[in-house]
Length: 174
Length: 193
Image 1: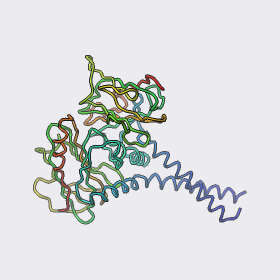
Image 2: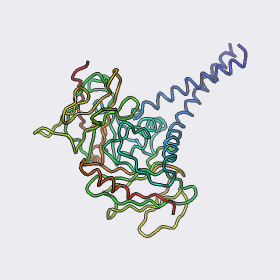
Image 3: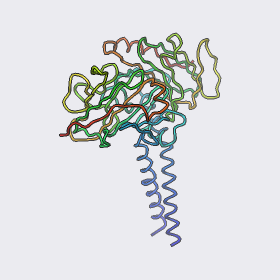
Image 4: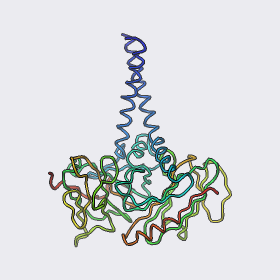
């Protein structure tokens, strides 16, 4: 009887451990899969400009069809990254950074950008880098992650103009 | 039972029960520890460093790359205002007035969390394209026959569940101060086939 209780206890402990492990790993795993898919198409530390989301968009769940996304899978393990962009006029725009565990560790929108420009030096937490005049230093909590810009298509007639404007987004090693 | 078989049984039990329950929790998405406003659910820690393990897993499964609430609040409805799951064989009306935000939209998603295939490519309706009545209120139809304005597609074919996401970009302070208190659109089931 005691042996059976022992096995049952081991099974429950094992289930608890597996539960905790899966819950902890899911965000890292899903981000890694998303980053791998994006890297395969566009490489790391390089801006990509996917088409407007529709039913064929399968890279990221629950995309917004009202936004034009630009993305960059970053890796600052080998050194800092310079991230620059010009804010498109008269619409909502934001740039956000996500750690490898899905946390949104930085964001800046069109209202917050100084003179319609964004200039960021992205470094690994605890690292130093020469900072060009006017640039903001942002520390990434993980070496890898994703930078995303969102441009609102506030009028269908502006689609081509906004598509061109979002391509000012640059993400490259310094 | 032989010891080896018991070890195997323990490992199998751990993986199925432990792993399965963890995946079930992750599938609950934003509902993990969330707040409710009518049929709409959100969570104040989406995208935040303060997110707990379950919420972080839920965001990864059902809302990867979601912004935190200071920038965007995401409300998701899996049911109508009566609490009945949203089904693709039914037509719904989503009725309300503009939520307090710089920009908002309502988007329909399939059970797989992707945009729903439809010939018209009508996935969403929002602040910039919705038509309002004289009183400023709008009625958006989800499912049923397409209309010229204020209509979003739901899955065709066999009846399945779907969901709606209401995005509030740059929400008013009143929204972020109390996510449950914001007046959000009412979802009413009109008819089913």
